[in-house]
Image (cartoon, rainbow, N blue to C red; front, side):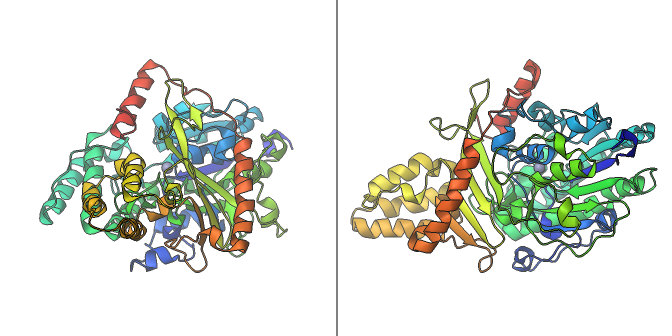
Length: 535
Ligand SMILES: [Zn+2]
C-alpha cells in the first residue's frame, strides 16, 4: 500500500470510563442493582455514532500504564513489561503502534493529560510530538494535512476526584469545588480528612479526592458511583463537547479511522469496604471497557457481543493501515489479534481475555519485576475471562487456602496479622475480630468457625480466595466465588485455565528501567509515598 493511501488514525482514550455508562452499551446489573440509570451523554454519543461497537471488550489490567502498554503493543502485560505502576518501562524488544506507524510514513502526535505517568513507562515511544493541550494537538493535525496521521488523545477527567475537569482552562473552578465538598461533608457531620493517597501534584485535587473517599466511606458505594456519574455528565457537557465539536469540523477527520475506548473502568475496588476506584480489583466493572471503532465509509452492523480484549486494538489498527505484518509477534496465548475479519462477518474464534494486577513490594520472595531503585512488585491477581465464566487465581498473597486445616485461632490470627490486617485501613475491623479470637473460654473450633464466617461475610472475602470461578451468568455481580475443588468437572476446567495463565507468565519479558532523570525519580518517590507504597 502506498503511503499516501494509508488512512489517518485517531485514538481517543477516556481514562476510567465505565462500560455500562457509555452510549449504546447494553445495560449491566451493576447500575440496576443500585437503582441507578445510565446517564445521557450527548457529546460522547455524537462522537461514537456510526462506529462499530464491541459490547464485551476487556482491559488487561486495572492500571493505566499496563493497559496502555497492551493497547499500544497488542501484547499482554507480562509480555510488554509494564506490569506495576512506576516499576518498569516497556520492553525494548517490542514495537509500539506509534513506532510502527511513524516508521511507515505517518506523522504521530500524543496529547495526554498525564505525560508524567506515560512517559517514564516508555508509552510515548514513537510519538514525534507530544502536545500539552488538545488545541495544540488539533493545530498539529491541521499542519500535517498531506500525510497520514496518528493522533492519540488521552483525557483524564473521569479519574478520581470526580467532577474536577483536567486542563489549565478549568483550574479556576477548583476553589469552588473544594468549598462545595467541604460544605457537603459538614452537612453530614463528616470530618474533613487530610489530603493524601493521590498521585496528583495539584493540592486542590488531592483534597477533593480525600473528601470524596470520606464521603463514600460514610454514605456507601452507591454515593461514590453517583459522584462518578455526575462527573461524567459534567465532562460530557464541557470539555468533551468542545473536543467533539472541534474534531467534527476538522478536515480529514471524517475520512480517518477513529477509535474511542477506555483503558479500564471504575468500580468496586478493595478497601475497608467497596470504594470507587481502580487498581486492586479485577471485578467486571473495573475491567469491562467500552470500545468503538469507526471506519470511514462503512456502516456498522449490530453491536458485536463477542468478547474481545484491548490487546486487539493495535493489531486491528495496524490491519486497517495494511501494516499488520510489522507488529511484534506475540509468544503467549490470548494476545491481541486483528478484529477486522470479525467486522467483515468472518468467524473469529472465541478467545479468553487475560487480565492481571500487580502491586509494589508485598512479597520480596516472588517479584514479577525489579526496578533499578530496588522496588519490587508482586502479582496480586490474574484471571482468564470467558463469556460466561471467570477463572480467578490470586498471586502471592495471603489466602484462606494458606490457613492449615487444623490451625488454632492463635495461628490464624498470626497469619492474618502478618498478611492481611496490615492492609485493612479501618482499624475497627481489627478491633472487632481480635477479642472474639482471643477469648480462650470459647472452644478453638468455634473460634475458628467464627473467624471464617466473619471473613466470608466481609467485602474482603473475594480477595482471600486463591482459587475461584465466577459464574457470570448466574452471579454477574461476582459476589459468590465458586471453589473449583468442590466438583471434579470444575477442577478439570480450572486446571486447564491455570495452565494457560502459567504459560503466559513463562513468556514474560522483563521491562526496562524507567525512563527518568534524577529529578523525575524524586517525583516518583514522592508519588509512591503519598500512595503509601514506600516509607
Ligand atoms: Zn487509567
